[in-house]
Image (cartoon, rainbow, N blue to C red; front, side, top):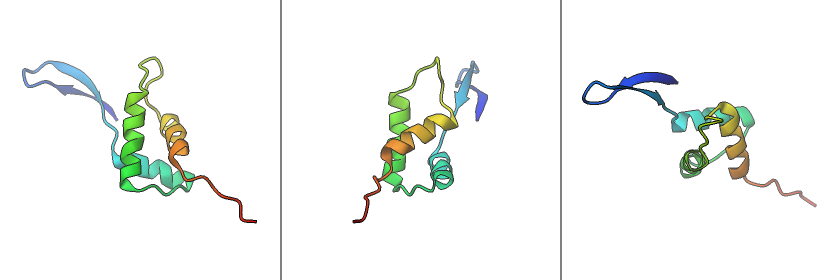
Length: 76
């Protein structure tokens, strides 16, 4: 995930890319189905809540996906 990339003028920086496929992978592991729009919302929520002291991890994805998954309704 994290790697060194370079600006147009050749200066290095750290890049840590996450994609919709990453969201989909965690959804599969959690047995959660989200639409593509919902998965994009997950990425936005992760970015908006980003804290450099904690970074972004698979646990971050699980936490945010859990907030987006449909609530199971008990059938009576």
